[in-house]
Every structure is written in structure tokens, then in C-alpha cells.
Image 1 (tube, rainbow, N blue to C red):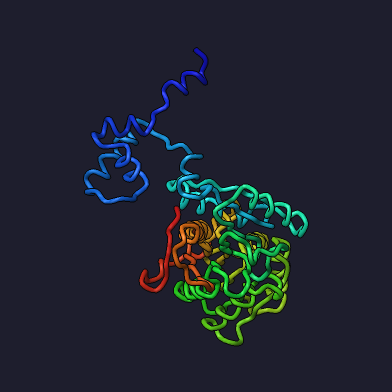
Image 2: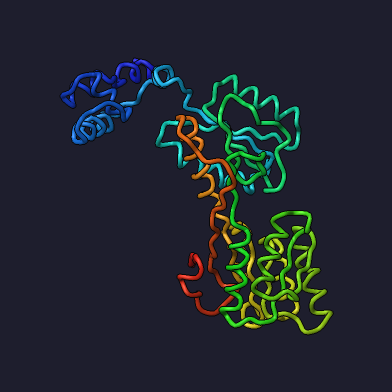
Length: 349
């Protein structure tokens, strides 16, 4: 017998689940769909029986009976995936147990391509669309307003009145700066990206709330080269800092490399903190980089939860939701961990 025939012959039907669980087919269906009235013991017995038998509901029948496709579209212009991949991982975690699949479409910054993908998603009758991108202060180059399906925006700018999720840049920057002061650093500098980014302005403002209005903020490119250049500039001016908070992990890695080339010990002489917790960079830095994690995976989980509620017709309050960041401790700062009730800290060894 061919493999396909074996699979067909061994397919478990809801009739089998009902027979083994000792209930009617109607009761089994209601138990598996969390509908109908029955005791919790009966509902649990049916679900455990279905799991033990390896029962898989027919996707087409499920879609027809509930008027849903159990698919969600994910639209992004972050084709490199730096921000989208952790967001998507969180979305998948939120939806996989609900039997919902996610279709990812990369549109770069092409409005025509974006329209093509949106139309394809609508043709597939997705239950909703999650839009995400590479910065929080730019909308995707495609209009998602007025669609017949719900839309959630995660780590990208949504229109007024939309459901939008972003990381709390101000809180993350404050935590980073507070940690530098907690390990005894007093001459603080913020080396960051272009001030045309809303996140850059927000983090710089939060840094100065803690470090003081006169604390230096240096703007440049999002690159290791800028980290090198910033260190050269700071040491040329005299009175170099003993604590440097960087706008992303690439800048921080460049800063640490430049300090090592100058014979300046990190973290003994200078403490350095990054932002993003891009592990491929942070973990490979020498010493490994203490940094702020934007919790993009959690942001994705929340986006998945909200799009599911909207698809089910549940009320979701519109507006911008900010999710907290966390400080990831490695070795580039030194000193003791800050008081736990002040900062959300993750110790990585």
C-alpha cells in the first residue's frame, strides 16, 4: 500500500473521537470548538481523547462552519528580517495553538508590490493582516485602511485610530542610563543614529532625563564605523566618558572595538550598553554586550492575540500600545545588577 493510502486509511475522524470518549458526535464537536454546554470534565475528556488518537480537524470544514479561513497575512518592508523575524516568531507562538497559519509577504518599499500582496491575501480570505516594518515612524507603502478584514500594526506606524504596538523606547533608554549610574558611571555619553528617527529622539530625551540636560548626544549612522568615529572624537576632545549608551548594538560593537584598540579596558575603565539585543552582534562582541532587548517576540505574541480577537469579532480598543523593554546583562558594563524592582533585568551567561 502506498504511503498516501496508509495516511488516508489511518485518518482519525471525529466519529472515532466521540466513540472512544463515550459522547455523541455533536458533543465531541462542541467540546473541541469550546462551544456548547457540558461539564468541564466532559470537555477535557474529549480533548484528551482527540489528542491521544491524533485527531486533526478538517481545515476546510472548520473554515466553512466558522466562516473563517484560519489564516493571517503578515506584511513587511523589513526584507532583511532584523525586526520582522522575531515579531513573526511571536505571532506564530500566539496563533499556532489556535490552528491559525501565517503567510509572510515582503514588499520592500514598493507600493505596487504591496498592493499585489494585499489583494492576494484578500483573495485567500485571510482572517486579518498584521503589518510590521523596520522603523516605528514610517507607514508601509500600501494603504490598509478600509479593508474588509481587521489590521494590527506592530513595529510600524499605523493610521490614526488603528491598533498599533511598539516597544517602549523611552523606558528602555532610561533603564540603560540608570544602569550605567548604578555601576558608578558619572560621565555619560549617548552615541546613536540619525535624529530623523523618532526612536532616536525618544531615546535621547530619556537618556538626558537621567544623565542631565547637558549630557552629550552624538548622532551618526547606524554602523560600527560610526562607533569607531565617535570614540575618536570623544577622546580627541579630552575628558572622555566612563559610560557610553549606544543607540544600537552595531554602534556599541564599534565603540568597544575602538576602545580596545586604544588600550581602554571595557568594562573596567568604560562601561558600554547597546540597544536591540541583536544576539548575532551582542553575543559575539568582546566582551559580550549588555544591551536593551525590545521584546519584539512578545510584541509579536500580543499582535497575534489581538488579531485573533478582532477576527473573532471581539472588541479591541484602538490606539498605540507600548510594550516594555528589558535590560539583558552580559559583560560590557561590570558592577552589580541593579535593584530588581527598578529595572526589568535578564541575566545572560
